[in-house]
Length: 479
Ligand code: NAD
Picture 1 (tube, helix red, strand yellow):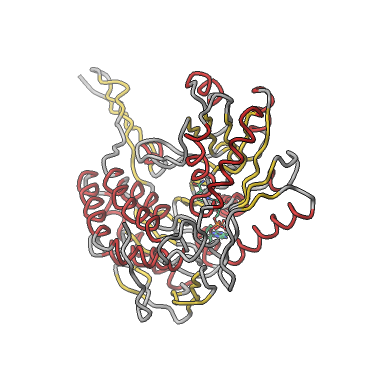
Picture 2 (cartoon, protein in one colour; picture 1 turned 30 degrees about the horizontal axis):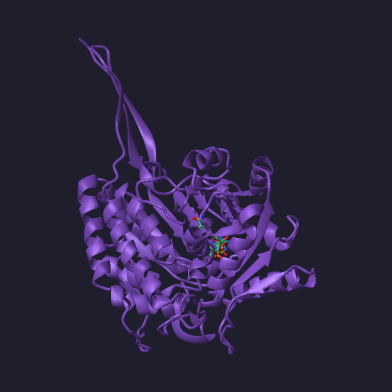
């Protein structure tokens, strides 16, 4: 269980450039979304400081590349150990900047330490195509150079670590940028990992809206690993095209879950609720369209509403809070706009417990009762606690509706009949499908979006190889 913890208001947050703690003349304010008040400042990286970070990473690359993968893996394990020593501090900081309740914040921080260790075990394989008297032909994988990593605000620690681990394991060096809304934990990661890594291998910079485009346009990067919205992903790809940087893009989703008539509603309701609303629904792979067979629709809707009514939405640093605020004002206004649109267009909104008044970015847990397929709340990624529940009668029809999206990130099927669920899962146009569970990702299993949910994958050997290039060596043998 999370203990009561506080953030030290006098802490100075620094960037890590070439292993050095680095301040900037300009700063950005960091706001606690539970009360709308700025509580800390982060450096606003200048263009000269970005150049210095890229140069440090470039200079560190040859020696880092030439270490063995086992040495690099051992350092990832030490980074995991170092992170574990800071779980209490980072949990409190996480809740203050991101809003998530302490227990769930702690899960993310300690989970990230475990991820570093698990991901350290991945290895690329070398393939030998011929080993004869005439020729020896092998294809092996080599690192790319300096990686630009850009992360969003919804899982700031996890989504940084899942880039750091494979990029460094592969032998690359990195410049990492968190979201301007949640820079603090990531800046602390930079400091913590700098005690383990050679200078320049991992540089962490923070800044305002100008920094992301400045990075993606920087000619010193060989690769961009980006997680964020589909709209921003397209801008990243445009900038990457200028000098053909490689890209991995993990983008938005509008994930459908299909609930078949044979489910035990009482058994699945809590899991479905968590899959839709955990982290106040600010999850790329949250269930965002819930298709329920008409025979169990009312029963599941009523059960989900009961859970919503007993869910405490509030300040994540207070004991007993289940869901925190929306992470930032811009996203809060977007979510409230979707709610207003649903109300104005006459949709039926079923809402959970009241949320605190004041300046926090709180939104009540909301279920939209069988809205039209064409409504905004169904078509758009809400990224907030508004779940459209939709009735279906026919499997072909529900598959068409589930797949009728520009997104293709993940989906879920709920049924007592695993074979029936698998038959549907295999026809879903998404990178991941869960059956009778959701939200689970693994360091050994590739994860990525189909359609406009992304380019490439993260995690697993496949994700590791996105940070590497094949190199084929063909040796003539003379007898
Ligand atoms: P965002 O696209 O606004 O920002 C993501 C990051 O990109 C931030 O660090 C931001 O500062 C930076 N950025 C903004 N404009 C940029 C530009 N022009 N060039 C380069 N970088 C730029 O996304 P967000 O609002 O922080 O995150 C929410 C979105 O992320 C949702 O759509 C969600 O589905 C998606 N997401 C996807 C995954 C996944 O794995 N597929 C995981 C988490 C979140």
